[in-house]
Image (cartoon, rainbow, N blue to C red; front, side, top):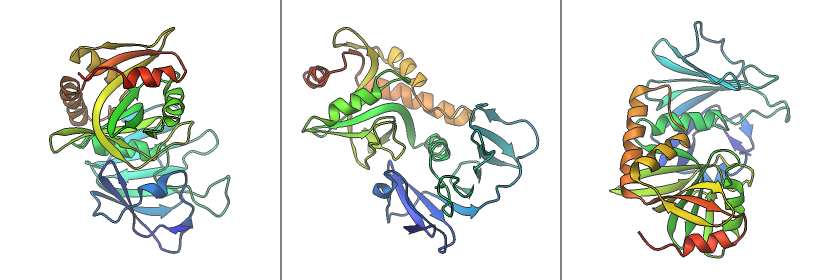
Amino acid sequence: MSSYENLTFQIAAVGIRLVGDPNWEYTLKGRFPDFLSKETPQASYSISIGPVPGEPSGLPFFDTEINWRLFHDQGQWVLWVRSADRDPYLAGRFSQDFHTGEIFTTESTQEPGKYIFPISYPLGGLLMTSLLGTGYGIMLHSCGVIDAGDGLVFAGISTAGKTTTAFLWEKHPQARVLNDDHTILRKTDGQFRLYGTPWHGLTGIARSADAPLKKIFILKHAPANQAVRLSPARAAAALLVRTFAPLWSAPAMAYTLQFLDELCQTVPCYELGFVPDQSVVEYVRCLPVS
């Protein structure tokens, strides 16, 4: 069990601190304990136990019409997370740059007496997307792998094969899968790097590790394993579709597009048609160094 008091998580070398009442306790879900840190955080959020404040007046600034809405209210961002039976169950009010704010959480319906983890999916992922857009990097809908010290990204839309890819690479003795669904790319000290995140997909794999980024692959199913090198322009367009883009912020989108352009000018990017067996792992590992 952990208290809400001054917990800091290091995700892609970005520190996020949660500050609350030390008497509140909860069980850290999934792989979040692996991301705990004592480093100085870049962002800090106070945590309040429900009830969640009322929805801001006016139309949402951004609305998925499924499970979350974003409002711009009195100079702040308000994020509203709902489910089929609870509207809402998480909410947050954040500064313009998303580095400070307050997150409101409610009691879990599945585990009475416990509270919903404040930066669980989707609020945590949306918050990270917004932070990254202020100049840190991007988050991709992708499987990330460290192979013999090199970072490999396998980006794909739903059903493209990210989960299958994660299972195949996890079997290789020299490989470590960082995540099967959400990975982060940053440029630090002049080098693009791949980072794991705690927001995993179906495999449950999520590791706090990073590596220099060597290659990017756009996944698609095919009758044979084949990698085709993409031009930087085609690669950037393909990755944009697979990026968790901060569509609600013009400056953040401008930064994201600039990041993708530089990334694809620097890191080799391929379209990878693959068959879902171990042969694709060896195929990728034997590709010539570009």
